[in-house]
Length: 390
Ligand SMILES: *Cc1c(COP(=O)(O)O)cnc(C)c1O
Image (cartoon, rainbow, N blue to C red; front, side):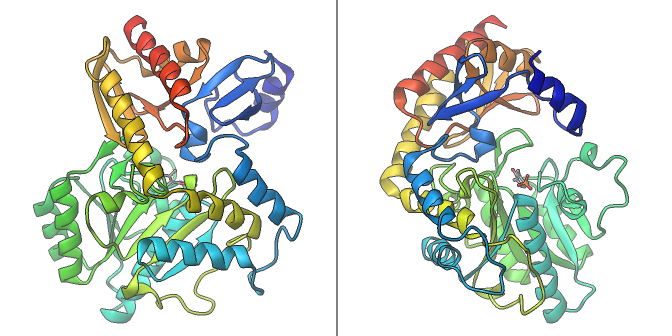
């Protein structure tokens, strides 16, 4: 094992089950390890490097900002922050943006917005946030409470109170929960990422949005993983024709620099006032400049390409040897093996020079949105071979 891996094992807190690969550089969808071995990156840093590694256009935007001013406090104005907020609002029809540094923080902001809106409108006992079982909303104690997967909660109790988890797809259960609890907000992922790349049912999402509207409950769509072109639309909720009150995003927004955003719709645009929320790094000009360059490139023609690549992946893998089913949307794909062997498949792919992710018992693919066809084909061939051989 190389010395960096040994040093990391000695000094870095052991929260990640890393593969024994040290990446030193890359370009686009290709990365290289210390021995110069080439890998196709089918995970893009968990859907973060939207345009791949060290993309020229993204790098130019970031470097230009880096050499003018890398950070100012939120006591002053900077252009990239204002530009990015404007772009997000124009592209979604929403009204205001709060910037943070991660997905969990974006969700924290959304939860605060829902609670303050409900407290002012209905009373401070209206604090319950309903989320779905099998969801993932982050690792802070509040977003863990929102996360509907028990195994993340164990040994960290008590979590922030006021969260209820319901079964995805069961609108009657949600209606009942809204009757029996004083609900401030409903939060969901249109495609559950960590939960196994599972797209929610179209009718269900529409029914949730309708219920939220009728009951004046804030609907929060967690687009941390699904956002920024990943599903073939700019935001996944756009596939469902709904109008959320709050959209949270992070991962792919910055193209590789840490940024999160809570995008606020008309109803909640003025809920946050002076001192209600804040973040030292929030709206950092370098991160925002990178994000502006990412968002500007995600137009309709580009999204059509994302969809075409998605169709290619689904067509190749559905019914392939060793594949039980393929799920997801756009370039967010989960592949369920016939045997319980997702980890072994990922290891097989690493040996053959392809980096894939897992989500529960599935192999998960989140390639860069601009992955070239020839590289995508090469990766899919290796993945098919892995499913057939492991
Ligand atoms: C990754 C993820 C988060 C957490 O984002 P961090 O940046 O790791 O805090 C929240 N929600 C969803 C849907 C995610 O995929």
